[in-house]
Each structure stands twice: as C-alpha cells, then as structure tokens.
Length: 447
Image 1 (cartoon, rainbow, N blue to C red):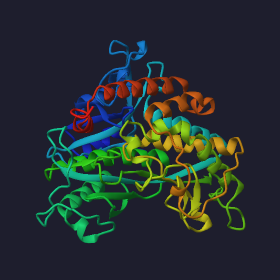
Image 2 (image 1 turned 180 degrees about the horizontal axis):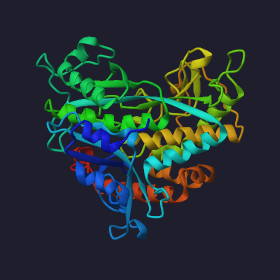
Image 3 (image 1 turned 30 degrees about the horizontal axis):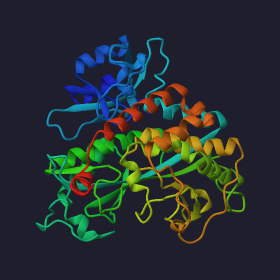
C-alpha cells in the first residue's frame, strides 16, 4: 500500500505525529513531533535516535558494548508510510507511524527487531516462498497494582466481584468487561488492526485475541500496536492489562501461539500440502527445522526470567518440541484443515515475546529445516506431558544454546545475537539481586 504521508496528515488534520520503533523488548520508543516538523524532517534524515536504545534492557539499562553505549552515535528513522494510523485514544488528532532505523550510509540497523524480521523474510523472498502467519495473543486483566511487591489479583467486573473460578470460553465472563473490550475493538478498527475472535481463556480474567492471517511484517506491526492498544484501553477503565508470560502463581501462563504456512509466491499453492492433499516433504522438513532449532531460538520466544515459569508440566503450556495433529499438549500442533489451509502452530512462544522477534525466530527455524532437509520425529498421539520435558529451563541455558547455533546466528545476524545476549544477561543479573517473598517466607526463620 502506497501512502502519501503529507497528503494523509493534511486530510486527517493531524497536529502531532508519534514516530515509533520497537526495541528488543517490543517497547515502543521514538519521538513525538508537531506534524509540520515531522514532514520537514522526512527528506533530511532528520528523525534521529541514539542507536543505543536498540540495546536497552527491559529495565531501561544500557548494555556495555562500546558501540551501543549512551555515548554512541545516532541513527535516523525512516517512516514506513503503510503503517501510519490514527491514535484513537487521544482527543487531539494524532498520528502514529512505525519506523525503520538506518545508518547514515542508508544501511539498515542490524540490531533493530523489525529489521531482523525483514532479514528473515528476504531469505523466503529469494526462494520464491511467501510465508503467512496468524498469532493468538493471550493476556490477563488485573487490578491496578501500584506496589510491585504485592501479588496481582483479578479485577472487579460489572458484577462487582472478581473471578474466583476458571471460565474457559465463558461468554458471561467476557461480558464482565464489555465496556473495556468495546474500546479495544473500536481502537483496533480505527488503527486497522485486523483482530478476529475474542475468547476467555482458562485463567481468571485471562483473555485471548486471534489475529486474521496475513504477511508476517504486517501482522507483527499489528501485534506490536495491539499490545499498546490493550494496555491503553485497560487504563481507561482503571485496570491493568499484562502480557507477562506468568503473572500469577496459581494461574496458567499467557502465550503467543504462531500459526504459519508457506505458499509458492508465483502459483499461490500451499507448499505444506502435497498434490494428494497430504503433508508435503517441504512441510515435514519445516517441522524438522522447528524441532531442531527451537531450543536455540528460545531467547526470542521466551525472553525473560519469568517466561520459563510458564513452560513447566501441568501448566497448559508445552514442555518439549514434539509435534502432533490437533494435539494441544505438544510444542508444534498441526490443526485439522484443508490442504489449502495446512499450517503448523508454534505453541512455545510467550505473550511477553517481541512479536517481530518471535515470528522471525519461528520462520528462521522452519527455513533451516527445509534448506537442510531435516526429518522430524514421528507425530505423537496422546499427551505430550507424559514425555520428557526438554525445553531450556531458564534464560541462561537458552542463551547458551543460541550462541552455540551457528546456522541460526548467521540468519539472525551475529551482531544482533551479541546485543541480545548482553541485554538478557544484564536482565538476569538484575533479577538475581531481588530477594523474593518465597525466600523471606521459608528461609528467614527456618534456615
């Protein structure tokens, strides 16, 4: 879609423009400018940010790599015209536009999340393959929690009472927050975020939104904006929305299941299906790649210490890299579908993952499987929870596996992997300094 930014801004009488970029964590960063100044800056590399923000941790700390320190140089932002949208929760007409960062020689910033996804998509384009994805994004609504030492609780709904029982697929349980979700849908429509169904998940006040399938970059953009949209809508109703992978001790975690198919760019045929409608060799090799490289890709799918609290037995989340047909207990589920809709669902990624990086990682693993002609294991029947749990159990283990995987590092970029590793190691060190309530409860007077 070609958009004339100047004409669009004048047509919508925009007064301010938010220039957004995604950092490693998927946090929107950037600048807010008067509309006139934004337009004047477009042709002069005038929208500038320190490259260091692409190495920030989730706590806002800068990593120690010399060329990503706060004193390092600037990069400039190039708005993607196809992503310009209204910001629907502001009274003044305000636009938001997603940007790609570039060095001043016009080469893309290799440590920026959106550019990492573009790099992976270029590999597919070179092969004449067209990936299509559709995420399912879970999140919790919780009471406002100004004290981070206090455990999270479900919010009060229209009934005046919080949920105390699990209400999976409960219609009335969703209706408890109708005014909030009316805002969410209105905001999504105003931003052309193509969400589909809303369901109540198995946790207390846990919801899931499904996105319609589309091109990976467009869908990642929408998921990036959707997270912000839900948080803003919730704040308008004095509620928090959280995409933490495991926000509450006795509740299930939140995932970002990623459905993916690969089509022939010329013919439009689904490469996952053979001529007789069965699973193609391409499809099986793709699953083989997901199985082999998933372990190394975990820092992009489960990027925080908290992420690994979700991936444990009996938690409604996968614990291994097995696959099966219509089996929700495994890491890779193949839904029952027609040959034209044949797809595989990566159920490992958490809702806390950066959408650009999670989609990039999943596509990179499948790509390597096809290129290396990997064979998958046999699909399992029955519960995957009866088999060994072999996913990385903590962030440090995942980072070690990523840095040992030469093929995956080559696709994602060695410099990106270095920056990601340093940022995640810094976050892990910060977490290790925290003394938890469990330690005070059981160790204070007993050891």
